[in-house]
Length: 224
Image (cartoon, rainbow, N blue to C red; front, top):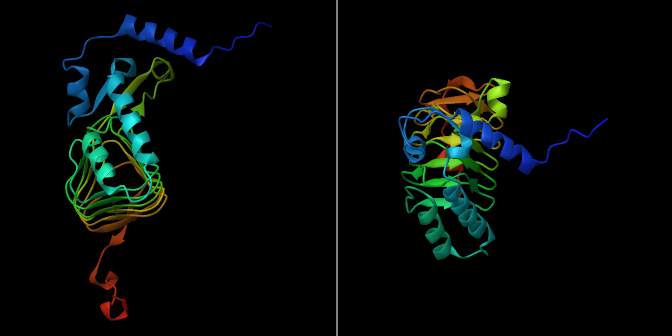
């Protein structure tokens, strides 16, 4: 039987030809789509690959920095992110698609090995705590198998309002807003909006209970 294996480069060439043949020009150019606040669908071959390579290079440089290089790490983040609040702290292992679509609006602590696929804007409010292994993915694939094979992708923005805490290894999908002061449990998959002031957990993620005064730690038990 003849070997039917197709290498990745051949696969991409074939599908790029299909995309070119069937591509219908959007009302907005790729860069306008990428930075828009509305969901969109696009052949991913028409997205600006040079900008993706720039982000890849900056992420690589950032993740290679030795401890104590605060000035250089700040310079790289300011080049990479669209908006980088001075109180943005990102631990090593960070990856993103473009970077310019990521906006931090106050203190933001992004822990080890986080991934942000920012094919749409990602807004991170003040006092955000993002635990290790969190993935925020604006991008998704077509549900139809043939369209998926032809590299049609969809994208929608993600917003974390102020004072949000995302637990370890949680997944935040495109089109989601997480309300002010809410907590997302570790390992949750967030597929829809989460209201303000709740603890939300699960797959799919859902509100479990409100955050209340009873959740406050007794400061008399805290060592300063």
